[in-house]
Length: 81
Image 1 (cartoon, rainbow, N blue to C red):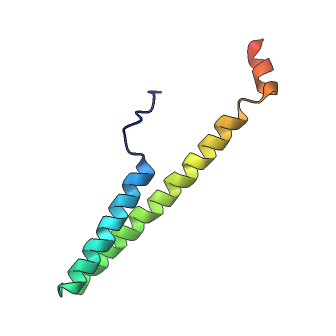
Image 2 (cartoon, rainbow, N blue to C red):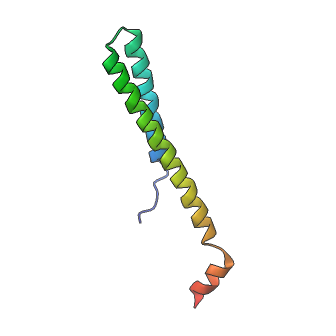
Image 3 (cartoon, rainbow, N blue to C red):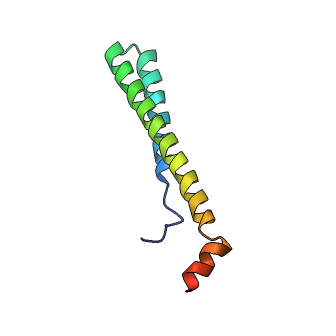
């Protein structure tokens, strides 16, 4: 596995930015009198991106918890043998 680049955006942040962008664009389209189908489509994409952000956030929390759990002294002793 490659080391994580500190300057790179995480997937969670990317999906949050995408969802905010689609919600703002949906609101702007509605404000300017756009068709309801476009507003609905952009809102759905925003909700999907927000859902993916939540999934990736929970996955990162679980991965961090499991990584912390693997460094217990009992597992370190087993790895030494």
